[in-house]
Length: 182
Length: 412
Image 1: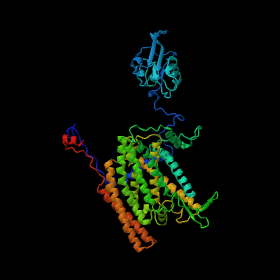
Image 2: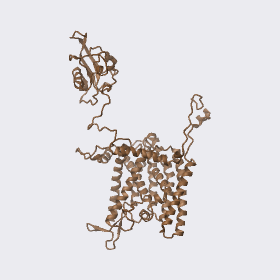
Image 3: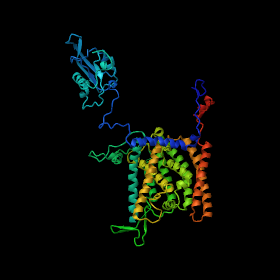
């Protein structure tokens, strides 16, 4: 593109006023702004969260994307119907499901094993969106640590226990957000 | 001899520790200006005592000492090694003539006598007392520091370092002139290059920040440029030149550069305090007599260091207040604004002081004193208005649109 291209719209630089030309008033203005921030920080009004001592507050836990959980229905059974939609949607291929014939009458399949590699997961929330029965959800647990790679592959029992841990604080999104699915 | 050694140890230990803790202060200030807390974890090692992060400088120093001191293969090894040594030596030897207080009464300690107690002599709190060329020495040594920067930039054999060194040389030469002009009128008033005498003069008359406002402003701005602090840190601006002249340095050699940089700032703060802000003098607290008791001596020391620390804090606040100059703006400011203002200040002061000496021989009349101060404030305000409204630093930033393409090509 040339400098004299008619499609370029040229905008003139704004002219400096008298205070701008005198320089010192603007100098004082800049310094005052910084001083205000310094004074505020010195009396303790900072945005820093001293993490191990204090926990950050999570704005809305229902839309936070942390560790996964597998939801249970009201009879305590796993809600998942092993349809593989989450595993298909997962861009990181971190979900591994082995399906089996369901022992219950209301569905055909259930996951014999269901594991998520938490190290491989990119926490995009696509599995949650793909799930037709709201079985897999992301909780607001963010401080996930482990001592080995094997430990970080969460199996069905572990994912169900995450549900037990978080069900009181974070209700199932389908009900909390006004949905009707059970 | 012993006296000089003790003072040297005090001064070197003092400024090196101060430099280390100013790094912490700078990081704290940076954090505060950005609504953060800043480093507050490192305290006493192997315990859980945090001490507000006061152990941070020791940890930083230890870390950088234990880092690999890597020498790139293409450098000019002798020059590469020489540069940090030159710059650190120059930065440290300045403190030989910088006083850290006024005087203390003569005393004896462990059988050694400091000063002549029988004659009630005073011990001057400066490593080289009565140095008649103190200011010249400071200027000479700070010019040598430029060699360290240029050598470091050249010997590193890297384009970033080289550009940093080039920028530094142009900048330091441009701003040494207004710096000198700012000092000249102070020397004119006191008639001495000795910093102790200059402080004594201010205690008896008026601080030069009040008596010579224009000189003060010019000197402070030039001191920022000399210390290569923001908004004048073009020699090492991270966004453009990685690290400027010390891009290729690591380990202890980098540490020497960084310490020297901080020492430049401490020197600049000391000079601003001593030359313009009255040094150890504070009305109603320190008195202005040439001899001291132990009480006034200690109060004066505290006043001087407090003022110096406040000036350093100002340096750090400025860092977060304004963006960096562009290089042509920097040069424009140096040559078109600072130099004329410095000259105006110098000439005006020469005329005013000559007038005052003619009519008020020993500078005792209050009327003449206040009159000269009023005149210099008037001169300062008029000169500032004229330079600002003449638009000396304004530059036309609009692109030249009427150029044909081949002309643009030939300019690249």
